[in-house]
Image (cartoon, rainbow, N blue to C red):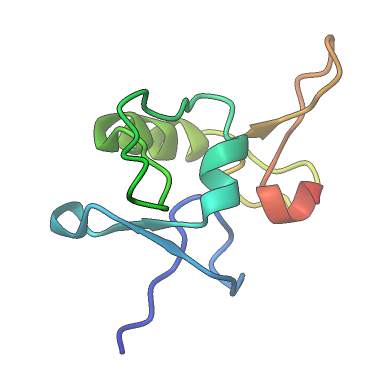
Length: 98
């Protein structure tokens, strides 16, 4: 079995990974996708498919955006989860903010 890493996390985080667009070789944790500030779940979600549905192009853009943002907790790039406070501009990885 091939080991995949989440495109939105520091590389040493192990957790269940939601596989995404194998042709694009993108993998991400479901919670990293759900809590990323720049992503919204697709409206055309298939009720017969229990997996969440995200637009692959939007995920790729969010990965690029995250490469510019450092996590205030671990200081590594890829932090796409924004702070909940209105005037706060801090960013975190999902697992750092958890």
